[in-house]
Amino acid sequence: MTPFEPASGLRNAHLQTLLPRLLRRTPLFTPQTQRIETPDGDFLDLAWTGPSDSYPGDQPILVLFHGLEGSFHSPYANGLLYAAKRRGWLGVMMHFRGCSGEINRLARSYHSGETSDATFFLRWLRQQFPDNPLWGVGVSLGGNMLVNYLAEHQDRSELAAAQVISPPLNLASCSARIEQGFSRLYQQYLLGSMKKNLSQKVLALPEEMPLALEQVDAIRSLRQFDDRVTAPLHGFKDAEDYYRQCSGLDKLQHITIPLRIIHAADDPFMTPAVIPRSPLPDNIDYHLSPYGGHVGFVAGSWNKPQFWLEHTVPAWFEARTGHST
Image (cartoon, rainbow, N blue to C red; front, side, top):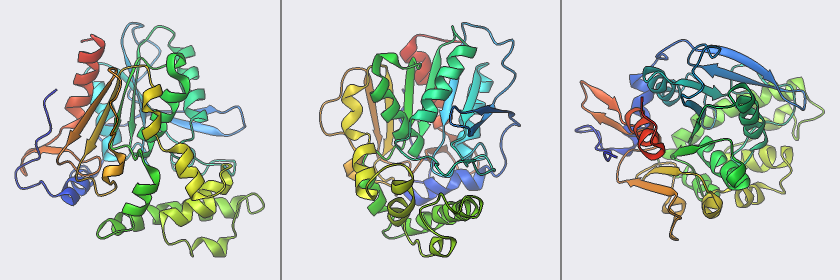
């Protein structure tokens, strides 16, 4: 695979992190949307690259899981799906609960280790497409979630191969990192979206939420959010317990399918604690780029920026699985 080389003059980690949102303000295509009902009475909203009823049974399907507070409108999401679409592949993204623009019905939400929705969705997808290779991509939080899924299911995974991009494999260290320096601006942005959605949920389900509406505004960090909301909603003792149980780093040895991990050493959401230190099994390709920021990886030039992920992700799947179009 061709290594990432940042665009001239754009090596700065924060530029790399922010540029995709500045360069791609509108999605590259209009998705076909679908809602499926979950076994517990909630719903998952899907975004497809195109119609699925006549898709050939021998062609791959790219399955995408987005990051914290992400959606189809996130530049990386519609960009990676469009890269699949241009190759003639079918692509689909599962919105985590509450991330499609409509709050979900139940008090529970999503988090870095919540794999039951992905498990249900992938089994549902396999029923619709019994013969197609399913290739998974997880971005940031969705990447750590996908590592958890692959470790839990091992040889029972519906996925033939997977890639995770900028995954926070050590959740405690990433939670601490985003409270430091310029990264606090990212925390402020994410918290604004999370608290807005949380407020709507508290108004809709006041008896089922772990805090009252007037307590939402007092949350000042992602760790506080995880301590006061994520942990009690999803059966963890506190944020530390959640981080310990759901960090993907120590679970990599349990994964059996081909997996590629893409990290940038200058990621402003991360610390060196996310980098695997012990030898990885042969089925895992670890790519650590000196530059790239958090889900950035903008190559080319100021005038002609190129989104490296949208080239390298499909190319790796083709090379690693022996499937070409």
